[in-house]
Length: 315
Image (tube, rainbow, N blue to C red; front, side, top):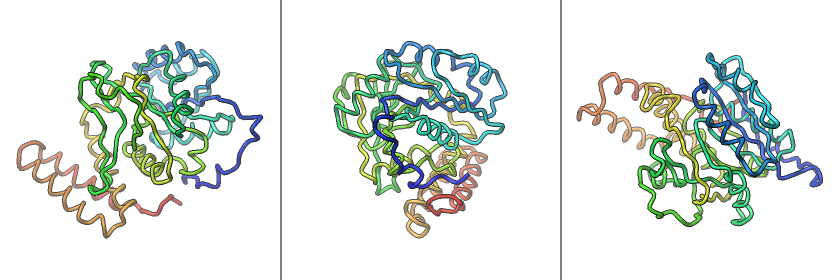
């Protein structure tokens, strides 16, 4: 399915029909074990003007049954008959939220847990800092004092490589002040409706991984401001669904890194980065850090990503 262009979202609903309603969008796939904590966190929210939009990507466990059974408040379930990927699933949820008149969209994973003030804090942050997006500090669920992401930033000189701020650091108050950041994983980010008019939706060609990096880079280039709020905290069960450093992660992470380089730099300018990345993969093999099978997977995945048509939107 083609990703919509900006024109689809330039229409504005009359102000009297808009509210501060949040469309909470989550994409599920084999999420049976993580949903109870997610639902508990939703139930405890002090801010109640929100609707949940769950997009299921053809789960084969009890995920869909749990979604249909959950009736804490307004809840819409979109059940796909095949796995369309995280990017396409988020797009389905975003469209549904905008069509329902939501003024804000909260993209959030379901392998997370968070306190009762999160929604209110993220919403208040938009007004307090005059920004278009807010995100919490995210911690490892099994190490709640260790930061996973306190926002992130891009390194243009390294092909727009994205790094997470504070990753692996124990929280000693070093990020205790709200700060303007360039990136955040869409594990949890509150976005004003207007952002989608300026930036568009997720690029579905990524399927999963780097789709959020792509979106945040486009938002940054379009002048959209993102604040990380230290008072807002979220616990993330990192890699609970795909598995840490799994073949799936390696394939799509490598594939999409190559695609993103070609997309934003063009084929000619991306050549030096391609050479550098491929040499790094080879050196990891020589150093014994990767098996021969892992080396072959990375090299073939890079080739796959570099061959994806790099026109801005798919046709």
